[in-house]
Image 1 (cartoon, one colour):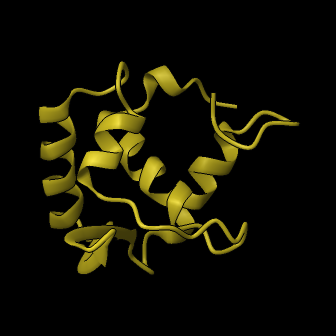
Image 2: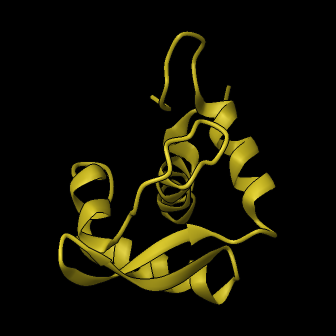
Amino acid sequence: MANQNILSKDLIVAMEIYKYSDNKTGREEPIFFSKLVVNLEGKVSRSTISKSIDRLFDLGIIDGSWEKVDSRWTRVFKISGEASSLIGALYESQIEPGRETPK
């Protein structure tokens, strides 16, 4: 199991997006910028999350679509099909036995 402290901030953001768009666990729910900021508070700054999202889009690792969430239009992120196996394997390697999420 790799230590999450050595992962780049981009990969930490990608793993958080994967956690919410993982079809295997049935935990598919919308993940958007402000939710990422709240979930990663203390780990990744707001500006770094914004820059990471831009890089992840440029690299084709995430896709975004505009959806209505709580009666507001929001850009929702998902891991692209090509990158889902990579990010999924990374995410799974971070989970300790008996835990649902990476440490």
